[in-house]
Length: 84
Image 1: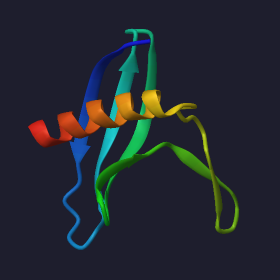
Image 2: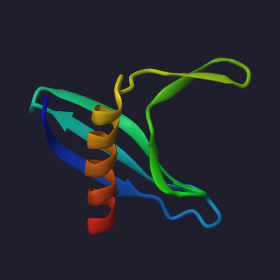
Image 3: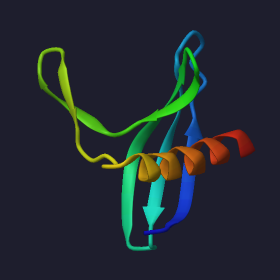
Image 4: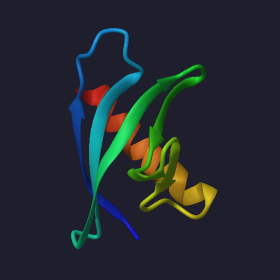
């Protein structure tokens, strides 16, 4: 699996931890939209798309299943975020 493109849309809301939204293209064949870029206590991290299943409870729609894949996504997205 290869990330073939990343689009980042920065947000400009003051006092918000949300810094942007990313779209990731995999193998020029599959796309994942609405990956959030969050400014956390330990720096930037990503949050995968999710939906609310009951009040106050959310589940990811899709997510990496191992550390290596998560790191690959995070590195690609945060790198693109810092470019802009």
